[in-house]
Amino acid sequence: MSTLTLDPPVSTDNTGASQKRVLLLKPRGFCAGVVRAVDIVKIALDTFGAPIYVRKEIVHNSYVVDDLRQKGAIFVNELDEVPEGKRVIYSAHGVSPAVRERAKERGLKVIDATCPLVTKVHVEAIKFAKQGYSLVLVGHRDHEEVEGTQGEAPDVTQVVSTIEEVEKLVVPDPDKVAYLTQTTLSLDEAKYMIEALKIKFPKIVGPHAQDICYATENRQTAVKNVAHGADLVLVVGSRNSSNSNRLVEVSENLGTKSYLIDKAEDINVAWLEGVDKVAITAGASAPEVLVQEVVAYLQGRGYGDVDEVEVMPENVRFGLPPEIVQAIAPAPRA
Image 1 (tube, rainbow, N blue to C red):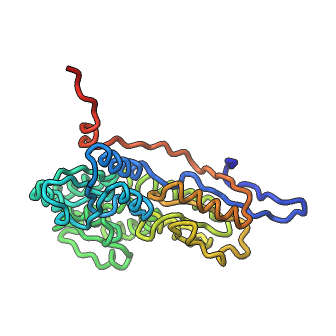
Image 2 (image 1 turned 60 degrees about the vertical axis):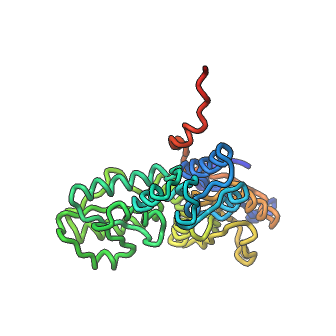
Image 3 (image 1 turned 120 degrees about the vertical axis):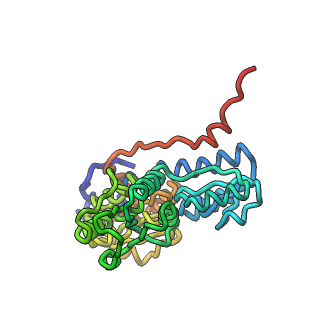
């Protein structure tokens, strides 16, 4: 596998005809928050033993969840399904204060796998609410991350997903409004929504740094840089993965056909008719093993050239939560 810069030249055979090829986008796949969350579950299982309960899916990927389930993790929708006094892990998407309070009531031993970048948004919500602002949260209201963030200040927070919803917003004081965004939105989607909010509320304020996470931005940027040179973009990720769905949208908005697939078996061979160049990327919760299975599938269909196209480096790492650090710390010497 070779590594290319942007806009790689198209290889040809001896007749001058275009060869079928794969453009493997980088960065792709697991972000630092997902690596951290998955590691937390694995370390908890190794340290404390099965079963370990996990509220909701630890990350939105069916392969990852099934793998952890086989190792002894038990996934539940709500804390009432966890036996009193047992150990439970919060997913990377975060939880509301009401969930934290319920855990205390049931005497649960909590390990928090919330992504630090999601925690950042929670902190901002608390800050703005304490300062007397009405909060507008841009995001998808059925997403667990949005539910958790809204729960920090439910009485003053409204969720909007469309420009039409922005236009219908009513707040006590139009001069005292702040906005936040879900971390996994499309950059373009967030831009348009924020512009609409600024038109409606000229004095609106927002976070010092954007809430959309680095991994979401980097993967979307990679698609934007490569989609124009591909005939098809395949995004490896699960249906309930927000950032994976946004990658499909980014490609489609650029005029390049794109499909979201959980695994290689999901590829419809009809998609490949007349397609010479296939770009592959993966959502932030999709493991590399699934990407390589897609590559192998395409190679078996005649896409012999595989070129990795690195758009930008990505070297972010997050530390483990104190509950895990303390549990795995070596015992003090006598």
